[in-house]
Image (cartoon, helix red, strand yellow):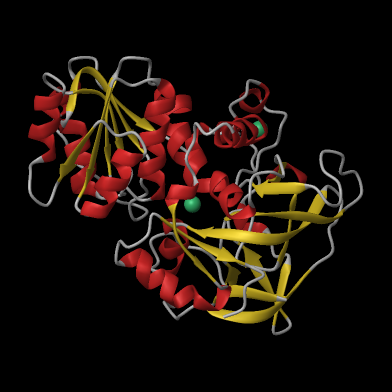
Length: 360
Ligand SMILES: [Zn+2]
Ligand SMILES: [Zn+2]
């Protein structure tokens, strides 16, 4: 089968003939139908996220269950599923209280090698590896979803939408009437904007440097936009919110932007860092800036509870209250991955989506 393999050393990703093992105990083989390109895939290639190689990339996918291993009960052959990148034990105190993203016994995704390339084992990325015609995942990573959601839309629920909407509703817990600002309007930032709409935020200020993304943010529910290439976003947000936002979200992974998102908070406000800077990065800030009950929150995977949240997001989409169609800038065949990566780096994509049955 075809899959996108990264061999390390900054070399280009190649579409190669790859074998995937049969599902073992508690595992599920999924035929991927669609997979979104997320910035974290690029971060593996540029070294920002160190990962063992060779690795089959992609982590935002949806498809159909093709086979299940012994003991699998939550899905069966033929089910439509969205892949979850979360691995958790299900038994620790965090898991038992619905905080699986804080699991203390989670297996490392860097241990799994379900693929074979040129006779050698290849690693799985983020418990998923969606840039492949087939993958084998743990049962807990194959989340059944309403089959009326088209696969290219469903795929986005598995990372970008979960991460962005979840940061707002699960992590920051934005309340009705609050003011918020979102820095960076890729697939995740735009999903933060939509999370604000779902939460009932009174003002949603969207910040980016690309005019098309600002326009799209407005269509998705931003009440105000700031072009940071022209205007100072901190001053603009303070002006719009009477002295600073209740909530800010950084969805770029840029240290200077994280600083701006901190400076744009009002008293009692909370910054949620959603973007992922290069591993090991550090940031200096004036400690006293937090004095008025301000907070900085980390956020992993939208603080997801995948079985509950994926179904909920699918229902919101089917009910017309969560927009996914608008997030898809372009479809690609898997062979067009180099072009899709260029488009992503150039800021041309909210989301680019690979259709696995398409041939270039
Ligand atoms: Zn992602
Ligand atoms: Zn656990």
